[in-house]
Image (cartoon, rainbow, N blue to C red; front, top):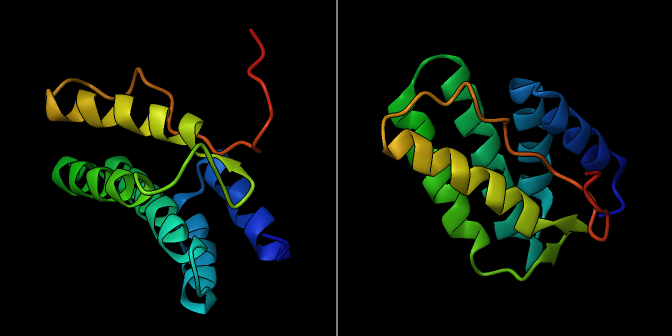
Length: 121
């Protein structure tokens, strides 16, 4: 997505600024049409799940993580120039932890990274 607001929202997501990130993605989601709309919604739901988690609402976090992951299932490994497999992997690990009612603080929050980038060992 070439809109500069998208890059800003991604940066806010990765910085853990969940409220501002939510605002950015929501604005884009309202304007978006076509196949990327559900992907934006899934990312938005994962961001809001983190806001719920930050505020201690474990049930809300669990529900929105599941919904966000469900929306992203329809996509392959890359959408919107992002590595969705990486995002889904982090979100799924967190969802499993929450569903088991285990402490989530030990897990890093899900992250967005550009498609084709590699993790540094």
